Amino acid sequence: MLFIAGNKLYRFGFKLDDQRIIEEWLARVKGWRETVVYERVTHENGKVEINDKALKGEKLKALATVGGPQNQSFLATIQATMDASDFGKELIEVLAWLNSSLKLIAPNTSYDCLGHSLNSDSSFLEFASEFLKSSSTGVDHLKVHKSEITEDELRGLLPKSIVSKVLNDMRDENGTALVQLDEGNELLIERTDENHFYRITIQAAHEHQTGSIVNLDLTDESDGTRRLLNLIPALHHLRTSGGVFFIDEIDRSMHPILVWKFLDFFLKSCDGGQRQIIVTTHESNLLDLELLRRDEIWFAEKDANAVTHLYPLTDFKVRNDLEIRKHYLHGRFGAIPFLGNLDRLAHDKDMSE
Image 1 (cartoon, one colour):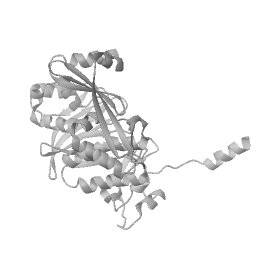
Image 2 (cartoon, rainbow, N blue to C red; image 1 turned 90 degrees about the vertical axis):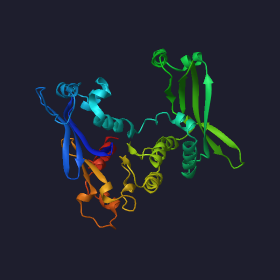
Image 3 (spheres, helix red, strand yellow; image 1 turned 180 degrees about the horizontal axis):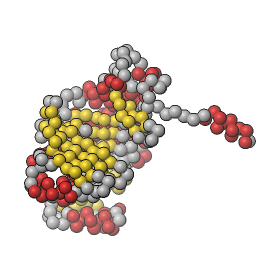
Image 4 (cartoon, helix red, strand yellow; image 1 turned 135 degrees about the vertical axis):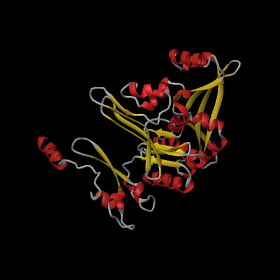
């Protein structure tokens, strides 16, 4: 993985098996040259071989040799066990990028703190409402309700252990905590001189032909509408700042045309700067050279040993006017399932009856 942190280009990667991380490396890249920041190899006998010439500080070098949990990266280990002053500016910048600029949107999870973001940022609320309306979801605009509740009501909404942890974590300092109840419902806890508890609810307003407005809780909306709403923060964030959003199964519950337009919007409105969207998908309609460059299309193919290999479209000689989707479905680029004899299976079922 290549990324920019503190105006420097880095390459980070690791290899792992079912139990542990076998290799891990971080290097600075300048032109065609790379300078290793650290490189760790853990052998089968548990012995660690390390190149740590660029690491500064005895504590950091000692931890690089000893390591942490075998299934945890070295970067995660130093973040969990050391003070920032012990591992220096360079690794602080690298960890800051990994923590704040690299975001994952999984297929079945909601975007963190969506209600709070909509409630506190009017430009985001306006953007999300307009995007949903323009995407033929039937939603005219979004409404966010923030209402104060009592501590007893809070305790009735959350398990006792969670309430105790949240309140204890906030006891010694001012701050806020957010807890998600379900999609479209969040709890906000603010501590100043005393605690305040709020419930935040997202509703989608639908306009009927009569001109009347019907408000529906987000949980009453279709899977496709909810999925799109959880992807919209990526577009809004990348229009105003940098970062990388990794969207797993972007086509889940969404119409192929809408997925195409979503990526088209990103490419047109977020052009330039340090911003990127990486998606995984089974939607072959995205294999379109009018939408994506050849180096932006990668295939994933599993071999006979269940090892997945990634390779780009640029590995193949294709014309600019080639219909990529058609040739992909015909197997020219690989990365398609080879199904067994399903006709025979259907015939066997008919014979058994």
